[in-house]
Image 1 (cartoon, rainbow, N blue to C red):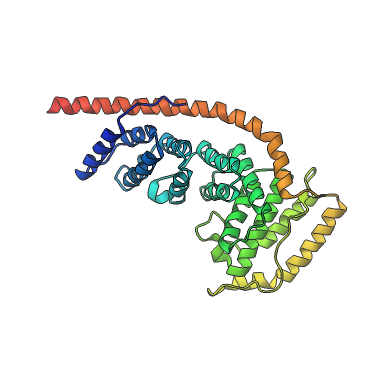
Image 2 (tube, rainbow, N blue to C red; image 1 turned 90 degrees about the vertical axis):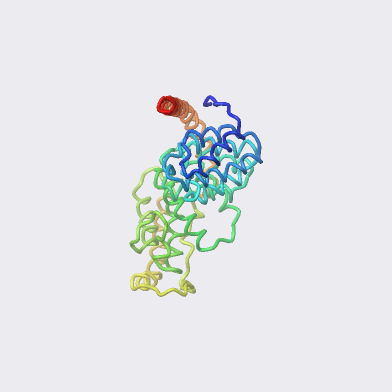
Length: 341
């Protein structure tokens, strides 16, 4: 745990108010001290205003990683998880771009309360920021996604797109049955959106390629599993599309969209062929995606978390060294200003 620089919250708030009134920027050190010293839900509510003010100041690019981490920890500690999620969903307004450790904390908090939809809201932000590099983040994300989908929720097309992209991008990091099953389901969900809304709706404000053919890519995953040793696909994963009623959008469809729709019967036939081939090769796992992910979580998460803790301790040391440099710089600036008076 980082050492806390004990400060009077009221004095810090007054200092920031006076600084903004004089049209001067608040330093990253001052906002960091304010967040570090939060000690109640009411103070967390107040802090959201100052994070917003800092984001809309000339120093907006200097919100420190440790301040974001501290903000999420304080929100969780004082029963204000909704504030953490709100600031994350409105990341541009609050400057909330967390590191992997912070994402994991927030996902895990929702999972412990079995709020799988809330956990998936955080996973969506991991996906949008393309932060699936850490194995523990991949596993926690896939766990949240599989648990939420197991509840059979009624999904809007935007939710299908988000869940599909999250499954695909997290699944791409896992070279095992979970990874390939997640990729297949993710691509199928995105392909469903592509058929109904067009390719522009798929990639708009998403980290997805703009080339049409997501159902074709789903079939390519099945084809790859046929030649991939020790990998099986979950039996429940399907293309989840049919030949009727796909075009529900009022927006004009591009030529590629029409061509993709015309390929649907071909895709369905190819899916049936590949499914039969996979069954004949014993490459279908009777377990659900939820079961596969739960088994992988039990096998690997603890070891991943042990490694994460060791790396986190190193990160905290780096953060503290950076903070001490800022304190030293602040001290030197004050001394210089006093001498010039």
